[in-house]
Amino acid sequence: MRDGLKIVEESLLESDVSYSVVKEFMTHVSEKALGKRVLLSLRPQEELVRIVHEELVETLGPVDSSLHLRADRPTILMLCGLQGSGKTTTCGKLTQMLREQQIEPLLVAADLQRPAAIEQLKVIGEQLGVPVHTETDHQDPVKVCQNGVARAQRDGNRVVILDTAGRLAIDEELMAQLKKIDRKVGPDQVYLVVDGMTGQDAVNSAGAFNDALELDGVIMTKLDGDARGGALLSVKQVTGVPVKFIGTGERFDALEPFRPEGMASRILQMGDIVAAAREAHRIVDESERETLEEKMATGQFSLDDFKNMMQKITQPGLMGRMMSLMPGMGQFKEAMESAEAGGQMKQIIGAINSMTPAERKNPKLIDASRRTRIAAGAGVQSSSITQLIKQFDTMKPMMQMMAGKGGGDRMAMLRQ
Ligand code: GDP
Ligand code: MG
Figure 1 (cartoon, rainbow, N blue to C red):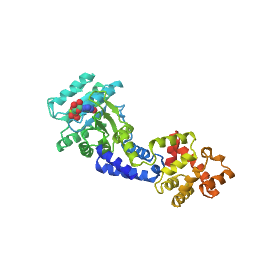
Figure 2: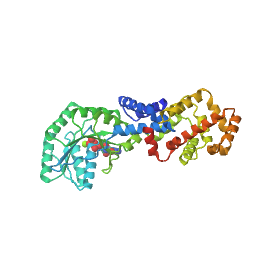
Figure 3: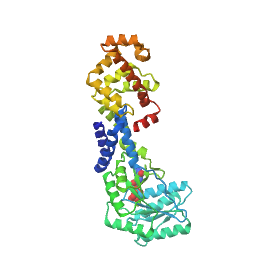
Figure 4: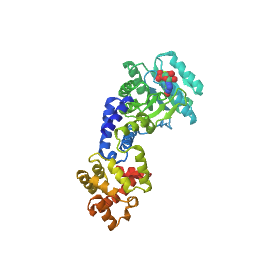
């Protein structure tokens, strides 16, 4: 399992999650995994992936894609982030989303750094049929925002979106300007827009913006490419605010409410990990495992299968550990361990070999005379046969529960 954890760790690092975040995250995961659930599972590798997935979902959550619109006055949304992160495009996307709810926002061109920025927002406003507030006669973005908000109030726009300036990298002037807008205009929601393709840079800028402003949410753009989005985990960790939306294209309809489950799978690239982890945890081969599970689920698990499992699970102590973790299975642990230690595993297998196919399929057939015959064939005491059947009976319902298609029951049991 430690190998499995290593694989998960490498996979996270590969998907741009920063080292310190991975370290902290892995501590949580190994505590959970080493605790009990992974050992209990018939498919430990998949159980491990499930734990990692769950932990990722938890870390990436909660879900909150509401814009928290106010009823009493226009809601002011402020978008900030580095140049090229996708702020202006996201203004358009949010506008489109609001239009679908019959809300007409006013867009405010507060990026006065580049003349083209105002023009870009104007075009977006025209395309989507919403007003854009622009002022070109001075260089004070605070004033532009204030005037924009006053105009929205006058015109009855329920939402104002402030498209602020970004720089290529964090600089003091930019931060001071944003802080001033924040203080003087008092936006209701401040969203940080980060470029999902920039990996570690996104994390660094998120830290700086978070220090300067009180952020209410993060929007990660450009997740339509190859980026696995691991940076989002770091950004979430650094800012501690909800991820609101993700951008998945240049078009205005390419904005999705953030779903931690989908993102967790993307970060993990589940398929790869399952495959890799499977390799690391090969105990029973795949086709056999499937057959076994199917048999357990349908109640056809026989002494033959029991024997097979015994033979496959050859790691010293593994069965004992599994047993000790099962509720009510403590007594079985000792039996298993002493069986392993005293070479009784071979005896169990020998005993099963001495049974007829019908007996293996249905151990209830085994009466006193059959027991004597089997014991003689296997060279053991007849009481060993009694004990073996008892062990099998105890184990069967438990295994069925574990393999049962009602995964919920199974998981509930694993969580105990
Ligand atoms: P700003 O400087 O932060 O305002 O960034 P822009 O909104 O001007 O976007 C910069 C570039 O990124 C533009 O070419 C956009 O089309 C592109 N862009 C923005 N969001 C996305 C996205 O979610 N996916 C893709 N593929 N491109 C995006
Ligand atoms: Mg822009």
